[in-house]
Image 1: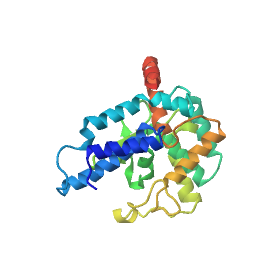
Image 2 (image 1 turned 120 degrees about the vertical axis):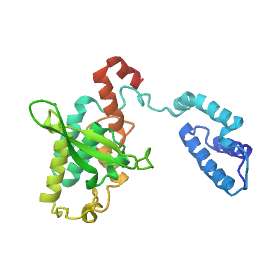
Image 3 (image 1 turned 135 degrees about the vertical axis):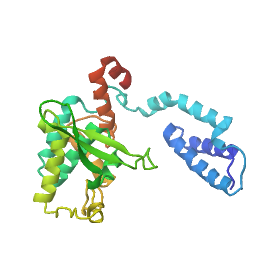
Image 4 (image 1 turned 90 degrees about the horizontal axis):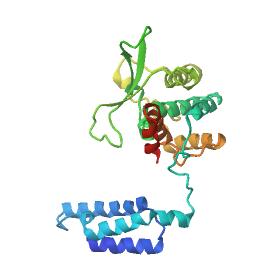
Length: 275
């Protein structure tokens, strides 16, 4: 069947008739799937003209559905705390979360602790950490930072959700004044446990090929990364056990870390960012 705007709009009306409380994000996923099919047909010369996404009828349908968001939330009794100041962990919870994982006394606990603290400090996406290799890590000395030497941990990100072209992007963190919530210390504890207690052989650094495929957040094999399900389960269980209310799980650190930074710089910007 050839794709057209009229057919797409008719199909969306049929979907909304079946599920009138469908969220806008879900509806847009259906639109994106059909637009991908239209692009394929357009590339083969089966359809011509502008993309259905630019059509007035489709834009009008999505606009009307967007305006009904609050009514849908009321109908479904969706938690009113989502997206507010009450949604997510607080600054005091950072130490509680770090200690929760540390007290597990296992490689998995230290892995989850590092995952949380790096995400909080670097504002990384969850997939950035899962895809990180040991070779993506390096240290960089910051000059003129006081009487003692200051080294930053740098995570090089050459491919991510918003970087498909191999640009050199980085996540950076330095030592925290409180060792219990320090991401650099968390990295040290994790690597020490991994290579000295868990029994994994230290990487052979003689050639790039020998160690460039080893993941930072490993699964059962050092050549297999941590999965999303494992990442989600660890932080979700932690939040539940510590009675932390957060609509986001694996991306909670990315949002809350940015909020805390704004809070320190300007309390008014902090409130505006949340609300």
